[in-house]
Length: 114
Image (tube, rainbow, N blue to C red; front, side, top):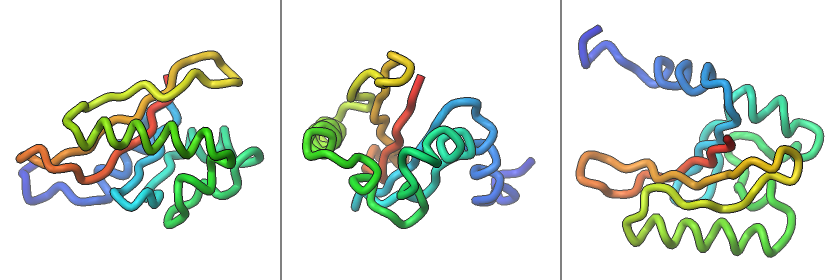
């Protein structure tokens, strides 16, 4: 497949198929995509997990907001992966991971749940 044949739906398909909860967020903290594993897992506990909503609407308490903001600040300083917490449900770690362009400018980030 040539470089010009890859489109946004191709990448959306990849993200949808990864068997882990992934939520992709822009620099304004708006949800761009929550894959099917995230939507299924959090459909009851976080109905705000929809494209266009703020990630802060999904994390309902101020402590969570501060954790995300602090991790984002670390990403802006150059880190590519920042631990944010262990899941209450699974005990597994969650991270914010930077999405950068070829010049290392921040395009956004995603939450990765192991």
